[in-house]
Length: 496
Ligand code: NAD
Image (tube, rainbow, N blue to C red; front, side, top):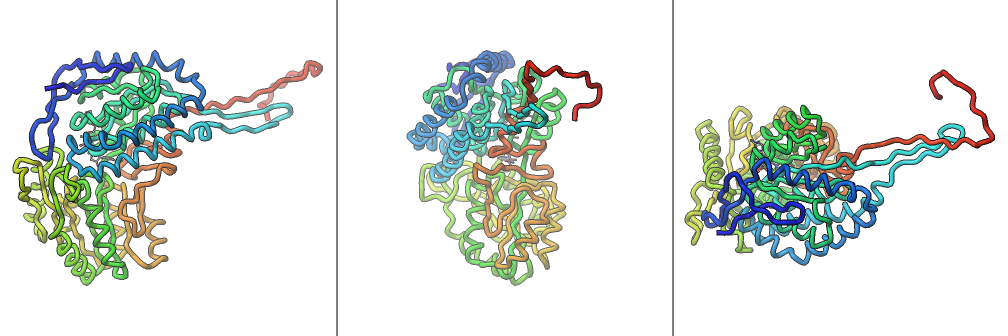
């Protein structure tokens, strides 16, 4: 069995302190193994990035952009290979993987604007004969740590802009589905990136802790679950690093009595069950205003859910695939059982679905639970599975209060035909990304992505304009070239 290794200084390596099984979740079988990097291997990657930094920092930004243009074409040419690897190790259906890759490529396209984004700010004659400008300088070696659920897109939130800003990069992707991430790293080298500028180390806590403690790493971007995000942010900042750490979510949609219910049903299906609900922007709570709205929505959803197709990643007819591991499947089933034990009503039960030909795959079918209340564990915590909870309320205000009191604040959506209500909602809801009749309001690459509350630790959001700020430090230069005929007097007061 081949071992998935690391990509350091442009070369594949397989040093490991331990090996970990990588599954094909559709079959439930071990597909391959990944090398978990020991501290010394991570340090080697940091050294490679540090050695590559001076030349890369001084490479004109337009030249860096030419590599990114070639990279975009290579990603498009290799789209099928990339998506096949995502499907094999993550389990998402090939059409869903293609959506992920497309959103990743958007970030590569935005990074190609770096010559424009890094122009800086200039003010002439701020004082007599004095000019001043701000420029945005590279940080040095920066690190990214990414989750399993978007092995292609989430790394692309980070490294394209980071390296376009003149930094060198060490990426620690998820050890659960590492192959697609390694392939996109290889393609970046094929596009002409010099060795050492972008390095990938596979590993677990040992690798992550090395990145967090090594003084040569200037900044850390993290995306993953909230407990780990909190740990990464606390440790990285205590070690003097700049850090942004994006965490988990519980995304609510409020369905108003005036909403277009047919459209709401269709879009909720995709947003709740697409990718088996393993998206940080998945809608996992439908908040219905009034019992009549709840009853109609539940009737529409449970009808439509009869024809949901769960199955292997390779069949494009399937709507969604398995969960990432057997443990995650069991955890999702536990949350469904806990809601039931707490008094909620399981309207459509996805536990133990029969998937012909794949008896050992990690499947849970679409699940709809009514009469969920805010004191239930299944409501309070992120389930990360194909489970939609319905919470009944009497007014939009009551629904908003629920959302605002929740520990997470990643995404939310309001279904309505009322512009005034929509405006009030988007203005006052305590959530970072808001949709109005848009169930997954994932910002396009020219805006930035990030939640509020315990969905993000740090100040700057991911990708978009915030990424330029995160991956650079501002330097402001004030310059005067006095004429040789002018003799300056002594001045002890503060310059004004
Ligand atoms: P995870 O937190 O288990 O792992 C994320 C990364 O952290 C991985 O690279 C992993 O190796 C590393 N890691 C895990 N445990 C660690 C530890 N104890 N110490 C140091 N590093 C550790 O997350 P996951 O299960 O891979 O991904 C799913 C989670 O990510 C969900 O909670 C989801 O909401 C979240 N997510 C959030 C966003 C967002 O933008 N907010 C996007 C995607 C996923």
